[in-house]
Length: 118
Image (cartoon, rainbow, N blue to C red):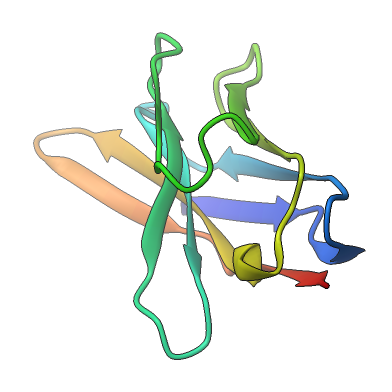
């Protein structure tokens, strides 16, 4: 059974930093592209950043130059270093992982709350 477990959320002030972690387990096929998405109250879930199995990255324009996504050596852990946080970064952050077997399967974590006060 695939599980994604996020950690590292919390309450910080504007301009401060946080580092999120996500550990994926339970896939004998490994994990393909992994990423972070976020959902603010009353808003749709949106992409924050993704990282491929070979380390290629993609960022939302709103977080470029502030956030950095990385992948652990074991390829089943990802991190999101968030610097210069702003109040509009406040959201629940979800880890996402894809598993490719005969087709692509998508899995989500439970989410971790990030709150940035002004």
